[in-house]
Amino acid sequence: VSIDGVEVYGPSAGEGGRGQCVAFDTAAVADPARPVIEVCGTGIKVTVFLRSRCELYHEYAQVIGTCTGVASSSCVTVSPSNDSWIQAAQSYKIEQC
View 1 (cartoon, rainbow, N blue to C red):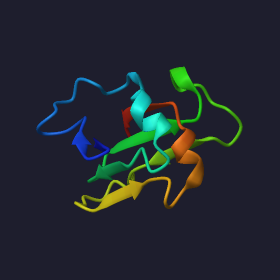
View 2 (cartoon, helix red, strand yellow):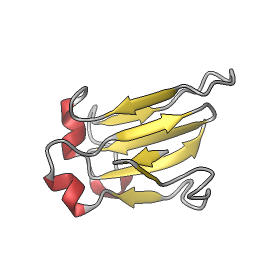
View 3 (cartoon, rainbow, N blue to C red):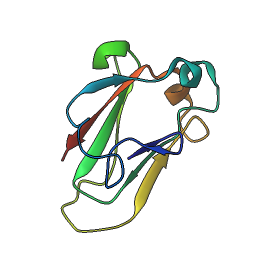
């Protein structure tokens, strides 16, 4: 899992952040082209929330990742360029499928 090109979960970053609510960096929230969230492989997903503290708010929560159970090295990328509300997202949580 990478946020704005920086691995936050995986072989290099470790698995310590799984299940924790993480706030996006203030600079990412202020930048209309960020965050860019990339989830590669299967068995892991990132839920992005409009609100801080990973709180649900209407339809503004999005699950990113492939949870099919079929092994794959494909990546799913979401950013404000393909989903405009993501620019206003405040927090995210990494979880197993």
